[in-house]
Image 1 (cartoon, rainbow, N blue to C red):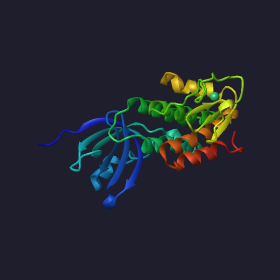
Image 2 (cartoon, helix red, strand yellow):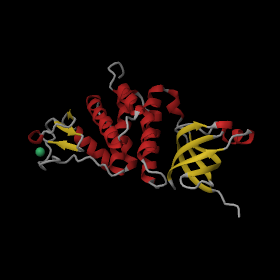
Image 3 (cartoon, helix red, strand yellow):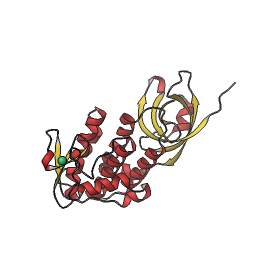
Image 4 (tube, rainbow, N blue to C red):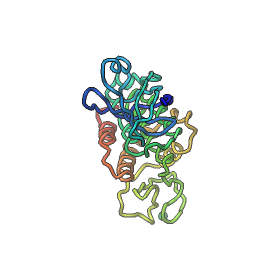
Length: 260
Ligand SMILES: [Zn+2]
C-alpha cells in the first residue's frame, strides 16, 4: 500500500547538500517537532523546490515516511508560507536570526512536537525581519533566548536569590549566575556571573512570562542589551554544552560599539 503524504508546517533550520543533488533539510515543524527530510534531486525536484529551500523559510510541506524510519522523512512537496525576506535585506538582521535556527537545531529533541516553540520562533523572525537598529534587533533576540529557556525547561530563576531565597531588589545592581538566575551579594558564587543593571532581571522575567503575541512590544535599552546578551550567550552555551557559533557571532555584533 502506498503511504499518503502527511502535511506539516515547518521552519527550515539547515540545508546539507548530498551527492547527486539530493539535499538534507532540517526543519522544525509544529506537528512533529524537529525532523530531517530528504529532498530528492533530479530535474523535476529542482523545479518543485526551486527558491523554497532556504534557511529561515516557513513552509507548508508534504512528508512521506522514509524506509529508514525514525526522524528521517522524504520531502514530497513544499509551498512557501513566509519567506522572512527582510532578513536577507540586511546582514545584521540575518546574523541576529542565526541563533534562532541554530538553537532549535542543537537544543530541541527530534520528533517531539512543541508548537509553542515554533510560535516563538515565527514571532521572533517576523520581528527581526523588520527590525531597525541595535535596540530593536537585540531586543528580539534577548526575548527569544529568555523565553525559549522557559519553554524547554531551563527557566531562569529571577524573582529571588537562587541560594538563600532573599527577594531581588530591583533598585540595585544584581548578579546573574550560570547556576541559572539571580544570586544576591551575600551568596556571591564563583561560577561565571554577570553584574546586570537594576531592572534587567525584571525585563527578563517579563520575557519569560508574557503572552507570545505581546512579546514583540517588549524592548530592552542599549544599556541592558550588552549584559543580557553576554549572560544569555554563556548560559545557552553551558546549558547545551555546545559553543553555538551563530550565537557567538550575534553577541559580537550586538555588543559592537560602532552600531547604534
Ligand atoms: Zn542569597
